[in-house]
Amino acid sequence: MRTRFDRLDVGVGAASLILVLAIALTIAVGDRAGVGVTAMQPTGEAHTTTPIRIVFNEPMDAASVVAHFAIDPPIAGQFSWSGSQLTFKPSAALAANQLYTVTVRAGATSAQGRRLLEDVRWTFRVAPPHIAFLAPAVHEQEAEPPNLWIVDPAAPFVATQLTRSRYGLLDFQPSPDGTQIAYAEKAADDTADLYVITVDSGAIQRLTNCVKAICQSPAWSPDGSRIAYERIELNRDLPQIDQGLARAWIVNLKDLSTTPLIADSERLGVLPQWSPDGTQIAVYDRSLHGIAIYDLINGDRKLITTFVEETGAFAPDGTRLIYPELAQSPQQFYNTFAMADLAHPQNGIRPLNGRDGVLVDDHQAAWNPNGKVLAITRRYQDQPATCGAQVYLLNPDTAEAQPLVVDSSYGHGAIGWNPAGDQLVMQRYPCLEQDAQPGIWVYDLATKTLRQVARNGFIPHWLP
Image (cartoon, rainbow, N blue to C red; front, top):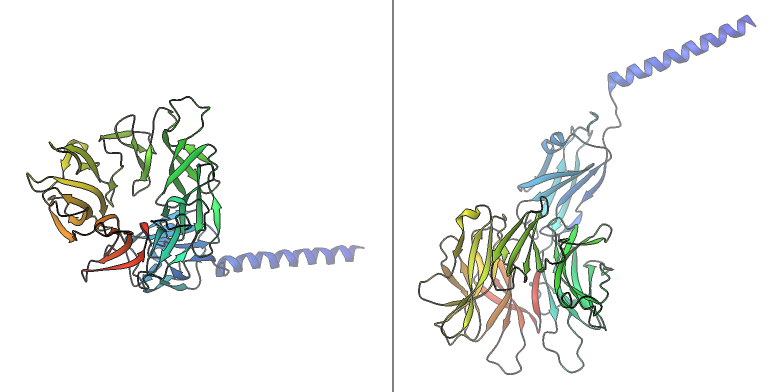
């Protein structure tokens, strides 16, 4: 009996010694499993505005990962973290048709000190931007109502239909990364709801249930997580003062929860627009007769008085806002652009109507992504032969305008820059022709050429 206990003691002692040696060896050699990467995006094909994302299998030391991150060709950008996910957002658009290689080099460490043992590397190619638009603009007999289409500017007139709504779409906006499009679709009872379509798969998701209301004018937050929109009440059971009025709402795409932008029911809001950093939303408030800019962080409000029911255009850095003001001549009313300095409100409002004594009628402004110049649609009142607004480049510092696309037989509108800022899409209407239809055109800044890419379409937007 004594001998058996001795053997047991020896066995336990040996096992303990082995365990101690194993622990010591692990400490001496280190954890050879290392940190793992569970997901990398994008792969294959990307859009010009696609962010780069890397998901690790544990929380990482942020500075270490950034120090071991590289992309070729090199591009500037900003890093952000959400748990174990790193997001790199390029400061400028990725180059179309360019192959990029992303590398996280071995040696990046986790918050617990574990290391990435081998380089993680992958490549992706950037597809050129397409153009989304609504068509048909002019209805022929038994024609479909307006639906969503996309076209590659390199293959004009070969458009692909994305939606097949029975009652038609009111408006739409592509997501910041170009993978989805939010749109407002009419129903048989004249209400409207918001939907999102994934461009590659065609999958459609309903976002709102606007009973006895019209929900329209979707506007994506810069990070793509929320959509602001306007809701117009049609419910006759509501107080008469509320019927037909529009208020701004926000839907969270994570859980589809919806809330009013402002809890105060007396605050109105149409044409919501996010600031470039996503911290503010501008709406036009008819009760205040101006553009109300709400700070989503501290609840503050700025008000820019104007009687033109538009929200204007934020500069790419968010420090300025171009918007139209109402003016009057002895013969008529017209719009003229002004600029508000949001970063320095004490600087006041500066008019952008250019030449002294020459009346202009301004319609739309689109900032170039470089933030140095705008494209605008304008009609000079001393040019009566022009049948509609023409396209000009406007310097916001000097208010000088240079002709870009001027053709007296066409009216122009719905302008927008591509993410690289070297091409401008627009809607052109041949206003001197009988049975005319608007078309979608693209102007190339480098070659100074203008070409049509789609017929009988309207409201074009770049699909970046």
